[in-house]
Image (cartoon, rainbow, N blue to C red; front, side, top):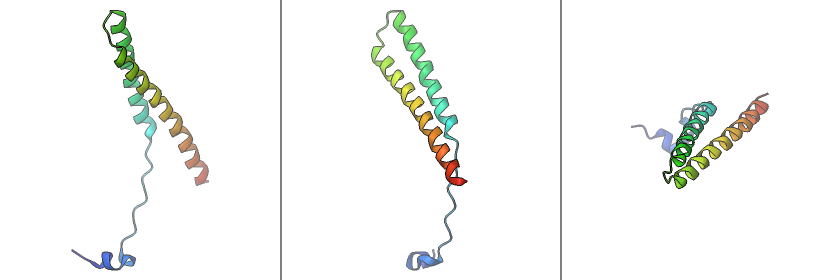
Length: 84
């Protein structure tokens, strides 16, 4: 184990640049799963099964997913704008 980077930080290797990932796929997939769960809850509610709490949770997951997609759109737009 080398202690040189700890004692003298100038000998450290340069840090790798962060990888830019596409979060739209992840947010879209998650939002789609919440939306499917919401539809299933609505079907169960139509059959008289008490799933109102689950329906609220699925609706919240869908709304949060859409908000995250909007956030990713503007974050990606800022990233592209700053890169020019």
